[in-house]
Length: 169
Length: 331
Image (cartoon, rainbow over all chains, first blue to last red; front, side, top):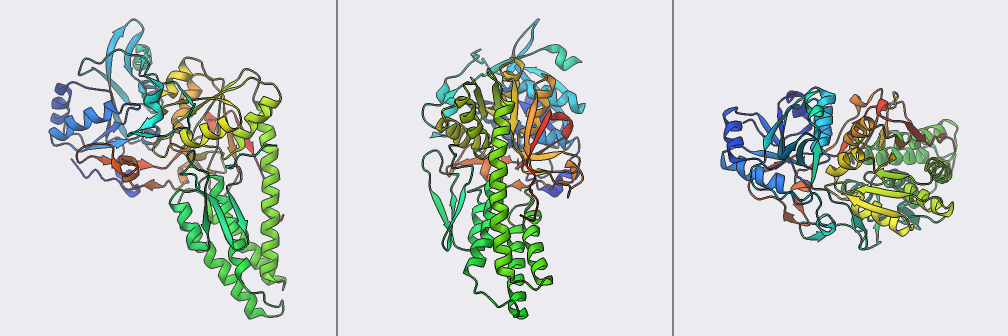
């Protein structure tokens, strides 16, 4: 893989070269990914628990691939700069409604559609509890530190249904 | 009108510029004492202040430094040139502090006043100070007027999504809405990695008695798809001739999703035509460490890298309405 420490001047040489991962994937997914020798693998943090970034980072590192972590609000920048080659999402369930993905998936699907980027769906790697909503406190703290004032309400969806047609259209 | 401390986050007190340390909110409301240009550059670079705070610090730094300078007679041309050189040096230092905010546009105004004074054989120091003070007063009045304009856009029953922090204006508009008996609910994104939404926006909305709910940055798609949001209101750090604008990272994806769900996006802007389109805006890439560490502790195990672009560029076509303030240079 090329260098992963990215400076502003590097961006012009990264057009359509980033694979963007979001969710929790099975180990086999990373084995297949390694075979493709991807140039840049970016992973989203996955607030509130950061489970998406933490699990993908470890799997990538085990296979000698260095992940680049971005915050969940930074995906749009990569699309705007036309840097994304493919989006890989994991899902925990499917139905007529579409795919039940980690929260944030719908943003990525809409960005991908706007910028003509392929979205691929993979089954989630482990038994993810299908909890739709987390506790408020999960968002009010980061790395053990309180980040919001006391008595603030929080709404913390963990999963969201992404209609299949949004991906296929 | 009740003011949020974030509305006017810097104040000149004799020979010291006090700048609100936004990184300590909501735990403490504390002001950093800035004594010179280097100190001003540091508070900007360390993101102790941002957005409108940067603008205020820049103009106040000229007042701070000029206030400390001795006066020269109008006829002392060498002395007047010294003042001009000082102003140009201050401008040069401030211009290098951060790349995306248009520092050179703001300092350029002050430098032009100084040149004008030289050409007209006026006392540069007093002319520039008087104009800067007048300009700040005019900005203040225009921003207060804009608070009213924001409140007028917000309707009874609205649920507003905002991102990062709009430097007091949205919170003050929320207070006005409350006075006007409008029922309004706010959703604030947390705004990683500095949590300006969680720390600043939630705090000031709460202080103003508004009803606010915090969401993660990645929950924007969910709340918009579920039609929980009726309007999006955000600020901006830089505008272009074609109305594209730069704002805190995360704004572009919010605008894209809002467009999909026909939710109108309103943007507080300071119009400028110095830059043609959003593609030409220089975007600051900050240190990955600011993303990968929090409170001095690593967030992720192993040798991972991080990428932290500080701002997004948002195309004008995604915006329903720009809420502008326009202040003329000659206050």
